[in-house]
Each structure stands twice: as structure tokens, then as C-alpha cells.
Image (cartoon, rainbow, N blue to C red; front, side, top):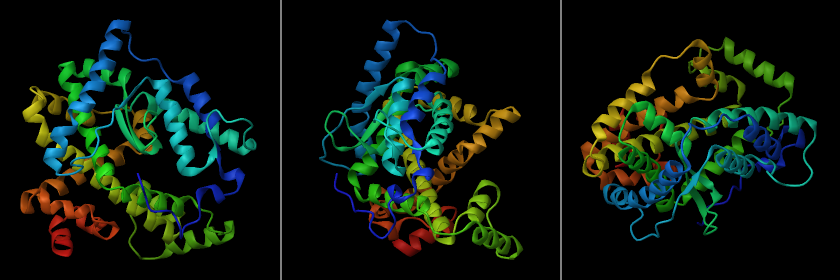
Length: 358
């Protein structure tokens, strides 16, 4: 997959070593402390792995038909993983994006990098029990070497389908419909990968600001009457420079579009291909909304799960309204380039995007 470079923004690898994370340490720690998956027989596990691999291929044609994207492109296979394998893959991807010690590489970074690896390993272990599937545009497919790989985490899918008491084969295809939509989004629009890397580089680059300058900037912002976001987004707005926060906002808008579009496609495809889709959607939405204890709420906030849920909801509402108004073919103008991405004020008022772009 050819992508634009990241010229114009300092590469993440240009940061001082102390700012990097030893992802080899992170992967090792993550694998050691990750919780085991649900109890299952080897036969059941292998049957689930085989069915997920087939479902990831079967989902491609209806997703392409509904989206109008990726027509004629090859249909890649998915990587069906356990939790430890997902941790290794995630660590490699994060190293590729942010720099740092590669998993499995000799040597290592300084003590700060290794300590960062320990912290990152704890986060990877936590996430390894929550991720059902993921399209990673930054890691090469182990079979073809092309950029981008679709990963499905078998034990987590089994755990959720048991918890929801849904038909396993239907649930597995339903999950694949969402993740395959992400694969189609990036396959049909190679510029998305470079766009993400450009903005990640801006966020992670050393901006040369001293501690005193940062404190002065934050103090001035707190005294200013200029409106700020609430919660975690408000904190990010204070801690980052204006240029970094703009890049962060662009990534948030892209994530909102990608997740909402995938949810829209899942619901459009589901009724014709997943017999129990209404039962699955109702059970899954109920699971998303179930109450958590205070510790769970804190963890969800820290790792951005609540922000992720908001992305699904806002992005799907945006996609639903635009497609209902102008149709999917004209909606696809959104994939033209960075200038046609929705702006923050347009996500909740899709008519403004229609007026600006179409």
C-alpha cells in the first residue's frame, strides 16, 4: 500500500531516548500478566478460529457492496489470535507508530524506556481481554507483507458470545462485518494511513517547550475566557500545544467517522446475512451501557473506552443522516482527502458537512 510520507512533521523516532518506550519489555510484561481466556476445549477453540477466518472472508463481499469501496481489490485473510499474540502484534504496531525498542530486538532503551515498557505492558494486558477485533493499518500482513492486517481475538469473542447468550456463528460474522469495514476503508483509501501517521507525529514530537513555558501556557489558558472541552478532552487541550491539539482533534474526528461508518455498514449488512442480528445488536448495546463499579469507570476513562463509545454513537448518527439524505455514493466523497473529513462542528450537524463538501 503506497502512502504519503510524514514530511513536515518531526518523526516520532527523533524524540530523545528517554521519551521512548521499550515495546519489547511491554510485550513481555503484557503476556505474563494478561488474564487467561475462558475455559474451552481444544476442539471448540480450533473450530472458533476456523469459523472466524472464514467469516472474515465472507464479510468482505457484502461490505464492499454496501459501501461501494474496494471493488476489485484482493480479499486478504485475517490473523486469528489469542491474547498473547494480540499483545505482541499491538506492541509491534505501537513501536512502528511511536518509536522505541521493537519487541524481540536485542539490547534495549535506557531505564526510563524500560519503565515505560512496564507501564505499557500493564495497559496491553488489560486491553488484551477487551479487544474483539481490530484492523491495524500500521502492521504488515504476515502472509503478504502488505501494509494492514485484520486481527480477531478468539478467546474474547468466545467470552462475549457466551456472556450475551447469542448464536456463536452469527455473532462471529457480525463482529467481522465491523472489522472488515475498517479494512475496506483503508484498502480503498491508502492516504488514510499517511494522514494518521502525520498527525501522530505532530502529537508525539518534542515541541521544544520548556517546563516553565508549558506552565505559563496552561496558566494563561485557565485564566482565558476561551471555551474549552470538558473532561479528558479538556485536559488534553491544556497539556498540548495548539498545533498538537489540532492534530489530536483531527485524529478524533477520523476515528469517529471510521467507527460510525463501520457501525452503519454493520447494521445495513446484518439483516441480510446474520439471522439473529436484532438479538445480537440489542444484547451488545445493553452490554455497552451496563453500569460499572468506580474502579471500572476510572479504568474506562483512563484508556479512553468511554470516548470510544461516544465515537460509535456520534459517528453512526452522522453517517446515518448523510447516507439517508444523499445516498452512499455521494457520501463517499468524504474519502477524497483531508479537506473532506468532517470538522468537529459538523459531526453533530451533518447538514453542515453536506453544505460544505457536496
